[in-house]
Image (cartoon, rainbow, N blue to C red; front, side):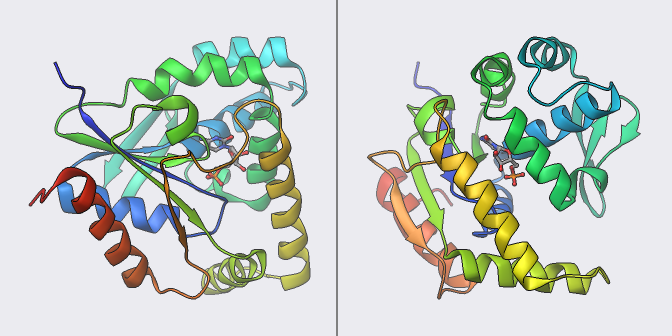
Length: 227
Ligand code: C5P
């Protein structure tokens, strides 16, 4: 039996994957996997348990019992750790940096692999991450690698933080983005890189509507008209 369709969208933070994958999942009525949230919640739970973010063995144990769930609400999908709503707590810059530290550990990635694969279901799945098309779903029918310059990603992040009334220093954000990119691209386990059969989409000078249009054209080319 043919496996359920997976649209894998990989790329660095701030390239617009979150918005693109939300739109695609909604359009096709597919499930959505925000794999970054899993690493973020693991890092959050580990900090709460007083674990060091390099203690691979303890982190694997934590990953195996991680009581993580995604709860759809009227204002979007909330991320739950047990009964605690961690949606906001996991979105800080620090939480992102912590996630990228635990995500660099091979045994931690292995421990979270099946949990991610379990999101695959009919009629299909849109998967957002760094290694969706290379490691988690190497047989994904559609692979997109969404990139953008560091400067544009830092600028978008700055605007987003300002719109939330948060203080946002451009130079500091840019520095953090570069550090996280560096860790994600240069790690030994599942480094951030496009799958050979991925469409590489550079969103530096594109609006989200233009990114979506190019993604839709590619999806249609791969899968035919879905609706
Ligand atoms: O996408 P997001 O910014 O939420 O991801 C947080 C961190 O989790 C990334 O910087 C990356 O280190 C890690 N990650 C990963 N593999 C994924 C998704 C996220 O290593 N599939």
